[in-house]
Image (cartoon, rainbow, N blue to C red):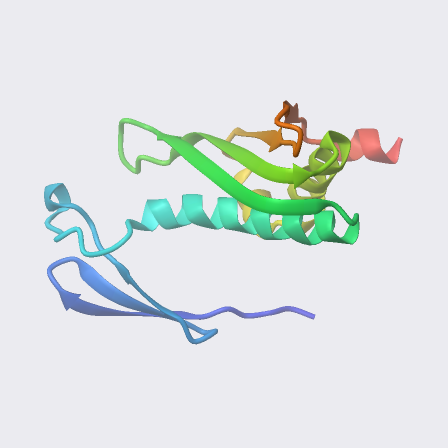
Length: 160
């Protein structure tokens, strides 16, 4: 079954828009002074970066809870490098997932990998054209920190 999502944008003034999502939420989108905006809201490109981080985070938390991992806190830092020339697309994205709690590194890596390969539609849309590096850090209850990088499992490798 296909799904349709909607967003409505209304110009407020200058380059400031009010966005209303089909799920009933509102936010303000704007540009900076260099683009005739007033800096009254998030930039559209920032929202793409936000969407990639939030999509993976929601997947990872859901999967880790099903694995009965004790995630006490979770933070994602997203960085996107953009091209110098218009349309100034992302040329690379790094998503660093930071977990606090009793979380096994293998489970964190697996949850992120499942998000990357199966569940996150934002990752699936961006990854064919933008290299996305996914790393994680886990602050364990004993004070130790474990970190790693999640490699995207190739569909051919998974099948064969």
